[in-house]
Length: 558
Image (cartoon, rainbow, N blue to C red):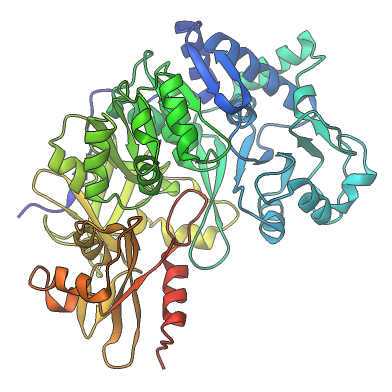
C-alpha cells in the first residue's frame, strides 16, 4: 500500500549563495532588462541600475553603524523603497523585519520589542493609518533626539528611524539621503561584510497572523527564500522576457518571494501597479506594461473579473501567474484561464514558516488537476500526511500535512517553546492543514484541523461544501464555518456573497444542495453577507467570521 509520503527529487541543484551575491550575478547577465517598475511612483530601473541602488542603500545602512545581524523593521505599503530595502538588507547581512501595514500601536510595540529592532524604516501614512503619529506615540523620545542618536527607555536597541518621502521629521533620517555622500571606504566596508555572509544566515523575520495568541516571528534565511523563489519561477517557466504584475502585499511572502525573488532569480521584471490592491490599477498596469504574469489571491481575481470595465483592457499577453493565499475556487480558476488568457496559471500552497511554497501545480498539468489540486511537491522538499497518532496515512486518506527540507524556517524568533511545538525532533514542520495525496502525487487541501466541523460525530470539511456552493450561478463568494449547537455540538453555517443584482433565499440554496451532497453536509444556517473579514494579504479570517455569525444568530455552546 502506497503511503502519503512524497519527495521532490530534482536534477537542478539548490543555490548555495547569498541573495546579494545572486542578484549581482543576474545584474551582470541582464544589465539592460527592466528589473523594477512601480507604476504609481513612475519608477523604472534596469537590473544594472537596480543593483547599483541596492548596493548603495546597503552601504548607507552600514554607514549608519548598523551591524550584520541587526534587525531592521520596515512598516510600509508597496513601493519601490520596500523592494530596495529587501535586497539591501540581505546584501548588508541585516535582518529585515516585515511589519504588517495594518498593524496599529500595540502590534508595533510588540514587534519592536520582540525582535529588538535597531532601525525602523516607515512610510508617513497609508490609508487611514498615520504611521508617524503612531510611532511618535510609541517612542516619544524621537522628537527630542538627533538623527541616529535615539535613546528610548522602552526600546534601548532602537537607534535609527528612517522615513520615506521628502518631508523632514525631527529625529528621523530621510530614506533618500541614506546613500548620499558615501565614500570608497563605505563601498569597501560593504564588500568586506558581504564576504563574511553565509547562505544559512537569518535574513528575514515575518510575523505570522495566528488566529490565537500574539504573532510569531518566523525567521528565514537566504537559503530558504532564495531557493523557494527560484523554484517558484521555474514552475512558472519565467525567463528574462517575462514581466510579472505583483498587486499582493510586499510585507508577505506572496509579494517578496513568489513575486520579487521568482523574478530576480530569472532576470524577469517586477511590476507594481499600486500601493495596495486596486482592480482598475491592475488592469491598467497589465495592459500598459505588457505583463505576461499576474499574482493574486482569489478575491483579487474575482474583483478584476467583475470590474465593470474589464472587457476594455487588453490582457492578451498574460500567460502565467499564481493564485494562492487562500483556497482557490474552481469556478474562479476556470474564468481566469478563459477570460484573462492565463492558460499557464498555477496554484501554489505553503506557509510563511516554509518560505513559503511546498506544493505547486505545473503550467502543463491537465486543467482539471490545476483547478482542483495544489499540484505536486516542490523540488528538494519532503511532505508526509499523518493521522492523530503521528502515523503516515495511505494515499487517498486525509491527514495533517508536514513539510521538511531546505525551506523550513530556523524557528520563531525568541520563542523556543513555540518553535518546538511547530517543528518536531525530525525537523518536520507541522502545518495544521488537512490534505489528501493521490496515487500520482497530486495534493488537495481539504481543510484545517481547527476548521473541521464535527456535527453529531460526523466530520464536515468546509472546503468541500464551499466548492460545491461556488457552482450556484448566483454565488460570488462563500465561506462555511461551524457554529455552536446544543443538540449536535456544531452546525454548519454558509456565509454567502451574492453576485450583483442577484436575489436568492436560503431555501433555494438548500434545494440546490439537496440530493447532491449528503444531508448532514447541507448548511443548517445560510446567511447572506456583503463581505468577509480579511487580513491585509487577502486571507479570510474565518475565526472572526465564525464569531460574528454565531453572535448574529444568537448561538452559544451553553
